[in-house]
Length: 396
Image (cartoon, rainbow, N blue to C red; front, side, top):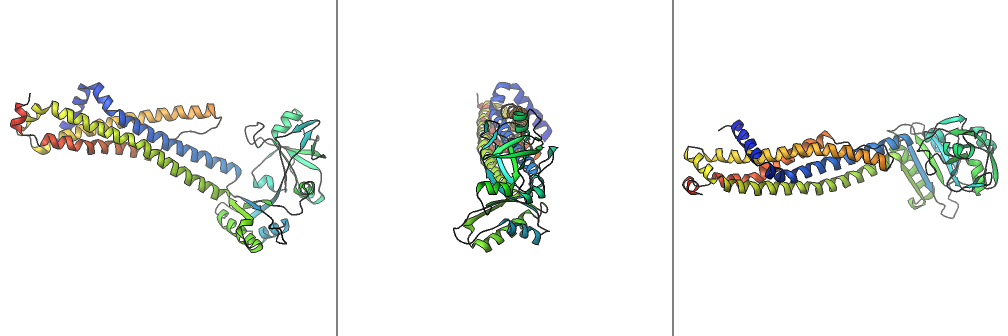
């Protein structure tokens, strides 16, 4: 008997006991579907994070410093000079000053993000101006009371006509010279609820002589890590202790998040793969039952000259076919659940994130499912092959 004949007999046996076969495959189906959906979810989250970081700028480097209480300080001149000394690694820099207390008329903007920045901040953060202009170097130099607002503030408090109007920050009036293009979802808790002003003015309002926060832009994506190391080295030279500063690039943050995501997906995939093992045990159990039910058939085949390897091949192929069909059904279910999960994420979380099954995960899950069927089918096949033909023929 060749492989084709054994496969034909295996399919016939599976179809003759449809309900039992489906129940046997259930563990394999669930396991394969779960692996595909979990890996697809992890892949979709990585794509979403990559797109998010791309919109922010993968060249972005954030710096936070703390004063040790002595003469060791970092000024904006130090940071600008650092960028000038390393033009191959650093292209732009912006001091950052966070403020609160913005008002439009008598209405307090409690959730607005008020930040003092340089004229390069929009380029560093990949923001675009929709109306008017952005902050200019002359605004920084002259400490002009001008600002640029996000689309949420412009639409909510000025009915889309905020240019030339006034916003008060910590009691000081600021003239709106520009409106930023919508970057988030346009809600109160998005980046669109922002006000940007010259950092020199913000520092004066906050009473800061030196600035503790900076945003740098690396000259290229490949230069992000070397640029981060240069900044760390400069700050370590000034402070002598890494506990007084924190430097991290968007590339490093993305790598860390991807590493955490990979570990989480691997753990969840391993848990889901337990269903495949359970399915394999179910296949072994049902094949043992099948051997018992077909003992007389095995005896007749042996009496007609079938060898042990022929009997083993028949039952191993039947077990493998059962798990392979379960794997195919699991793949179909996995793609269906992935589409449902994508729709639920889009509807529930308002995020354009897709659950994207990968071909590697599909092929791996299918290969493991078929391998499990063959592995767990070996013991029943071995039992069938070792049956004594005389005893088998007497079995009733």
